[in-house]
Image (tube, rainbow, N blue to C red; front, top):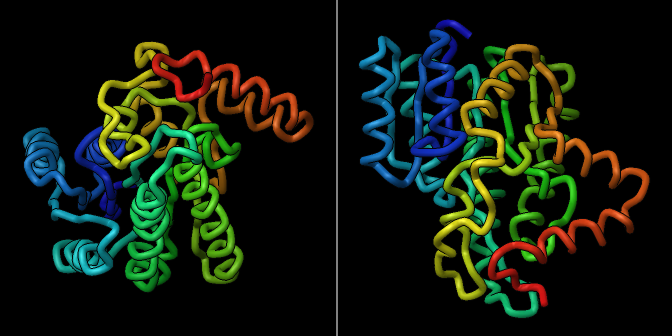
Length: 268
């Protein structure tokens, strides 16, 4: 990965920040984007202070112009693009029956369309270098999770988009990776949206028992280096994947029971 130009969205915290640090530590040239400029500035400064190369640009991935500008920033700064990691995303926690539909639209605009916009504008440069496009999904993209209708829908949509992109470019040397982390210790649940679109606040799950964002970043880094098509992370994530293949109805009941145990669960 030395001297590879890597764009990472949603890189102001969590998995995106960990990915930026990991790639920079391996000698990659990193361009990071997110909505929080001050946090981006701190991430980039930390990378540079440790001898790495990094630059940043404010980017709301739900805005196509912002996505195009992020791609052009990488091209203008480093001359091209080798890897695009579509990591930016938001979650939700509410029953569909109680949900304001603007929440699902917001999630689709950010999670799905953000991936589409960035990929569309980066694709010509990545094809030129026979590089990689990555979608950071979730176990919610493998199995629909109750209380997360919009989140699961957006992640399933990303998977379909990325699989099609891979097949269309099978003769062009394009590498496409879908990464499915399990429950990860990050701030995505803290910023998850409730039924009316307000932020949820404190996470309902025990962060200490989850895989760290840094560990997730290492797995994704290795998968990109090895040009793998798919990785499913955490024992829980792999278990969900395999049970769903053979016993989907049983898994429905198990997941409902697990989610119902969360503090302030919407399930009664």
